[in-house]
Length: 117
Image (cartoon, rainbow, N blue to C red; front, top):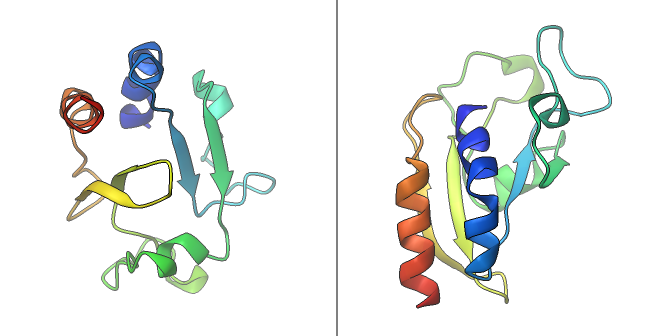
């Protein structure tokens, strides 16, 4: 959730560059596991989507076969940050090795600035 908080803090700057933030979670926001809170509880004001069927994970080839957190649910994705253009083409990506491996917010901003000029 720390990465989402960092992106929330920079949401104005991101939008000023013509970008936006959308978070996708494999958690069903209507029936979260005990101890898991939704984005709104953390003050996240950008769009968050639920993908309990892991459609996006499979579409982008991001399923982590080593995940043991929720194997009965089909596993989770590698933590991934994407920058897409207006046509939905991936222009930059960061795929983490484990749940704690995520890019710094400054890195995401730098890449967005590079891509938007």
